[in-house]
Image (cartoon, rainbow, N blue to C red):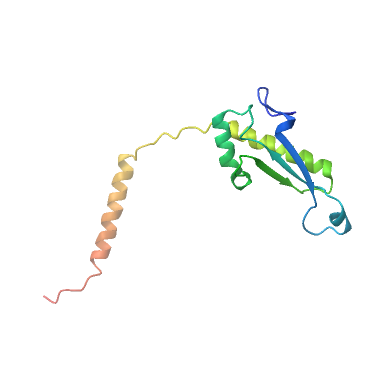
Length: 139
């Protein structure tokens, strides 16, 4: 069981881990040992996450969210399988904590009278500059 907050925890059945070989250089170790971890969290089926949190998590996850509603995290930071596993679980917990925060509503503001006047003054000046560029009348 993975504890996120006091009220939210993730059960073991919701998580599946698969160990795969890391990419990149590393010599014999990288060719023989499966140190990279692929953590799969069945987010859509999770009973512990409320609907709005799932929606925010989906937006935060981006490409890591699969069509069947699972969140896949791949970690190959270290050469230790156990450490990569810990990092993957920490990242999942951090992602869920971010999704728990409700975004603050933006309160639209009106431009001040001074800023409106400055804008119009700048537009008029620019228009006058452009008006001077025309052909000169011979009269």
